[in-house]
Image 1 (cartoon, rainbow, N blue to C red):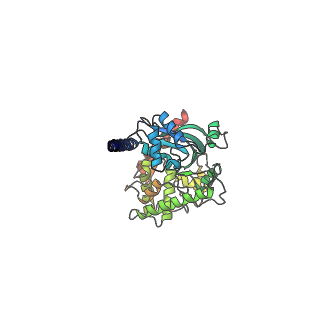
Image 2 (image 1 turned 90 degrees about the vertical axis):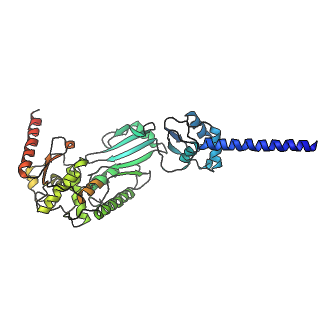
Image 3 (image 1 turned 30 degrees about the horizontal axis):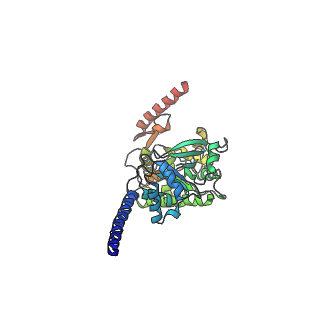
Length: 387
């Protein structure tokens, strides 16, 4: 009898082990399989929350097929205690394992609200944006100009969220003075910048910052980035360009940057200035005259006078030979690369095609051709004046 009972118990144990093994294999398969989420979502994880509460939220949003398997999987992989507060982008079809990795990895939030401090050539602006998980694009919620309008309620609200991201976007062609001035309005930064960095030494780009970062540390990041960009460009420069140093390349790049806002024609503009330098012609470019007037501190805000085109300043390329003594702005990577690798053309003249700078320039190889282009532009100016 005891032998019979023992045999049945052993059989029961074997069946139980097989069943348990099957459940484990099924659970593992479910944990790593593609999830049911049909459209990306932004999951906000509050500070002090736990994996159980998160699993309920994920089930409610259709990201999990089974909250228990999700929690067991996170516990088995020793990640239950590593949950990170923030806003996390959960892509469509994400497996439980992938979701666990996303919400325990840490770092900056990957979705939610972002405040962008834009430092532009003509003005600075603060923009509040929120990521739309469905399109993975940021949607503007509010914007204002510091000093000219009050901060909207949307801005004040996001400042109170711990997972709000902050970014400083510096436009190509801004001056060092404009950057320092713009950083003063970035209220999440601390400290002062006591000296304006050398013109051209800061890389225009988008920089993520954290509340409490210093303005000096942001300046240093920009400086280091520009050093790397310039060194790489100079190392890969074309043979025979009329530039003797990386600094001369930076000067020319700043002139190119200020002469065109059309990315596709930077190489052509670079070729004009390169050809002029080779032929000993003066560069004769208006932005250098403007810099001689403003020294990079603000925007001129009007057209140039004839007397200013003739005035002798160190930067006036209608008067001086060759390059100006310093950059006239902070050029971006594309303009630096164009300066050291210009297109191979015979152009030595250019003038705006239309009154809209976005339409670019008309280039010419001869003075006669250039005069025709200028005549067309003057006709557009006259027509605009009559309307």
